[in-house]
Image (cartoon, rainbow, N blue to C red):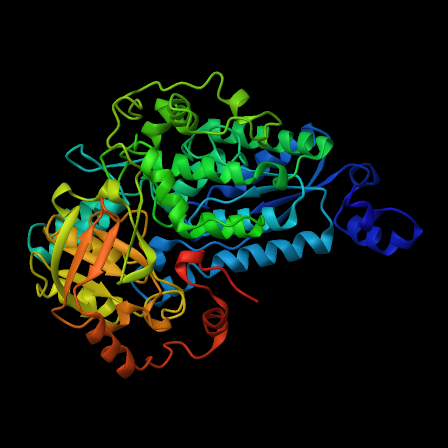
Length: 554
């Protein structure tokens, strides 16, 4: 056992004395030491229940003969951080989480790990750590929030809440209406109830084989979530006994499976940042071009909020992630030979899976579309690519051309949208919000929600080198690479330039001649950095472009 490094032999007597100081007994020290990485805190609704999950995991570890020892991981609530400087600190925590978890595990030589994440950057950060550390590991998230219900009985969620603010500014909703959403959109603990980033990543953790069935969909308040946590605690002991490591699970084929499920579910565009970053830690390269190839052959089977009016609890009842994967096997779109944290292959795991509700999980014979939920666009405006959640785009905006309305920050764009300066047909461009330029690549949920809330979702596109919340819908195209701060073409766009978007054709073009762009490039000067101290300054110096997953480079 790895833990022998801190507990065996006379030379380790000082180490043992400190372990005894924890109240551990000789019997407990004789067993495998299992690190329980808990992201519990009292500010993130998706994490407020993780103390209960952690206790259930610990009970499972003890029941299977291990000694659980808990330590923390940080987590940011993107919804609370949205719309102010706090959002600059969201994506950057992914790497802090991975690095701090690596430090704790290496310093204390655990034999195995149970990761307990839930919200947006917490899940990929811990998956990155799992790949990097490569010791027996299993994931058990906190689960999704239940959908809300307005006073008139309509179901609702966080994306509706943000759009309600836009509706208020448009004059179509009064303060009482906003308060109805405010009090009812988020009715329980858990990660917000649509197919947003947190739930996308928790579902893909199942698809990649690092979590037990139900991890992505069992609602946070359900007792089934506690039973799942106990099973995860028991199962990590099996992984330790059989020495099944993340490198045997998170293989190239497993990542292809995850991207395929991503396209079928209609996940958040943030998965296009996180999957490449996790794969990088596993020594695997994922390119945006590969994502388009997978999307081209994968039918989109689910339209959960914000793309539709169904929620995570509905997907759970319909058969969950495994129900979706079972449909995909009908077209032989998955590699069923891959190993998973159950100790069995994915094919064995799916033997008894079923689609219990074809209205929620459409059969492959009747998909929402023949291609996946995410598209990667390329052209002179995004030479290295950009991404859009095409499953949440109105049909009339799948192909669009309009004049650029250019803003150098999210705040400038919001002021113009709420000031009714944006007109049908416009293409809103928000730049200098990328990984380096932000720094931190803020999510643009406020402007996209404002556009939809003000009734412009079917007539206005938004482009940015920043990113979007999974709650974003509409013709919202993010991750434009190279970003403005790196001298990408988006830095050269001028007010009124024509921009052409062809989502089915995977194209995005700035209708300006090469000669004119060369003149603009020669005159371009990068603005002064927005942040000149602290962690964000260091992050900006090290971070790669969005098309490479915004990974930190040495």
